Image (cartoon, rainbow, N blue to C red; front, side):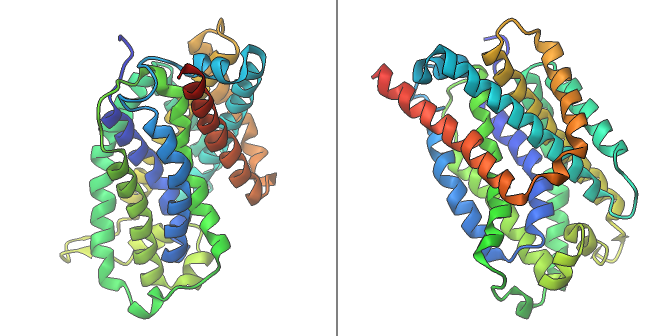
Length: 333
């Protein structure tokens, strides 16, 4: 298959892509609620990714065929169109969140626009190119964030690690950890090789817990919640062996790279979702059109209530793909 990619490349892309939103959200949430959000998100993700293995549906069966099989031609197209619109909204939210990587600067709308353009360049080349793009950048994002967390543990105070807050705070991590379900729309290019989906998910969720432990443990929950980016604030006080200090610029760059990976993933998924609804739409123009619409939505997303994002991610990114896969497997069997 010309535009194929491996599950490992997809997982590396997702790990790089989720680093920045997890850092932004989990750095101000007590660790028990991060664990709760991760446990709830694992339920639909387990089923969706199980269907991508070699024992499930046939290799190369894309979202268009699955939606048609499960819901019929007309309803399947409407669901694909709704999914495309929601993915564009999530891309707009992601781009707007990128300003938190530069908490001391007036980064809106310049940084979101630049990241949307860079992500559109990568995702316009196809899902395989997007996965290779993210997998390469994973090699830069993961070690540096791990280094910052490792040396940040020296400032952690045990009394700050006592569970605090309410269970409602788990909705933030849950909203972020549901995003990998959008890989349903990239299924047709995925090679059905065996891979440790659970191990990758534990790595991603574990990173969120580690961010919570280090940031809340070092700053305290009130200060972490008062900061626009507690991870960035925590990184200001660390030093590596007394030689390397002042990591803020590096952190801002790495978070921007991660946000760009997430935007590329979302735009690639949006491209496939819109192709399901309009098969004759030019793929290249679909990506740039989605990016342009996401840019226009930058001024809209602040008005969307927080509960709207969790409901939308649950319905569009989790329930629709999981139900589609269940009905398709049921009918094909």
